[in-house]
Length: 202
Ligand code: IMP
Image: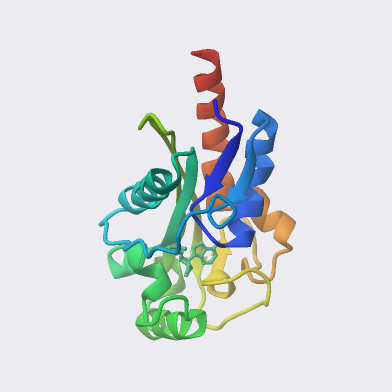
């Protein structure tokens, strides 16, 4: 297995979390800039996290010919029939405008009783190898939404999300706590298992 993996994401926070796991397998992560990948826009037009995650990893792998890893993630809200889902980053229109996204979400759920404000974060991590093989690992974390932001940690919808078993939001919990129980942590645990199986079958 190749030892240097190219990250399809530019998000340093995500790269750090992913690297903690891949390091166990003697793999190090480099950015797509370091891999000499030209600055291309990858349109995330899939209907599922799996499609978008695969697309990001595959297209970067094609550009550099090296093993590539990508994460696609988002928030799935039951009383909104799964929205914002794959549109989480651009829910309110502008890509990555967390404040606007949170305002829009609050507006849509404020009259829904707390017990029906169930939601989950989902992360799908895909590793694509130069021979076209891939490993797909999904992780989720269940919780409830509140209608007033609490906490300054994390990013995105973290200040509105209370994970099951806790009273604080992801915005209030220490990053170590979030990183131990998050959707990305669970996807990475899954990835670890799949990498171990792949090593055994070699
Ligand atoms: P992506 O970068 O295309 O995967 O978009 C992910 C979007 O989902 C982010 O912009 C956030 O709005 C949301 N999201 C994903 N993971 C998290 C998280 O850990 N906390 C809060 N929001 C998240």
